[in-house]
Amino acid sequence: MCDVLVVDDDFMVARAHERIVQQLPGYRVVGVAHSGAQALDLIEELAPQLVLLDMYLPDMTGLDVIRHARSAGAAVDFLVLSAAREADIVAAALQGGIVSYLLKPFKISELQSRLVGYGERRELLARPGVLSQADLDRALGAGGTVSVRVVELPKGLSTVTGALIETALRASSPDLAASECGEALGMSRVVARKYLEYFVGTGQATVALRYGQTGRPQRRYAWVNAG
Image (cartoon, rainbow, N blue to C red):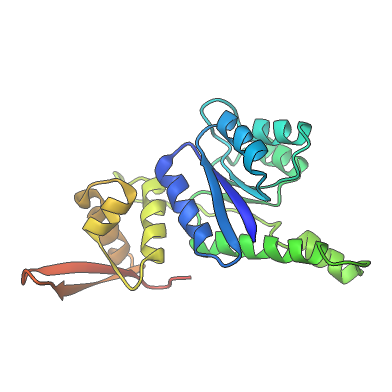
């Protein structure tokens, strides 16, 4: 079992990342931090194997968290999930020994693939004996890709909120109502429905009417290519 610490100053984003991790076999979230200081305290207290780390934190940068953790001798890996795309930040993070860097917003499947690759590398390096060149290539290549995904939403729609709703929609089984989506993410039904209808309009989601006990139809949304 791989213990994971989620670090993000946005409570809704942290909750979404936590859900993605919890749904993946072999992983569990042992803590959630919303600041750099809290992250360092939990790294020391909980000793997670992996930290999902944002670069923009209220009291320090993600780079500071990495440096302080390394200086303290913490045996922990970092997987960066951030909107920070400056070359110097990415370079410094790579020099700090991160296992992967994903730019927000990203698909659930992209984070899942990084986590699976990280798990395979941990398993490979935990085996007794010597490693072949093929083993080393697998270990160094697993989960190490810097992924860039930029999504432009219409005026009035936030890419961060859109990514959160996409995450909730992809994780729903089999579908989701706007009220359920809003409740899960701490926003109004009206706001959630605006984004859900956008995804329907772009063909990324479908909508169907379902009649409940009240007799009034409810619009239920489903992601077209969940992965």
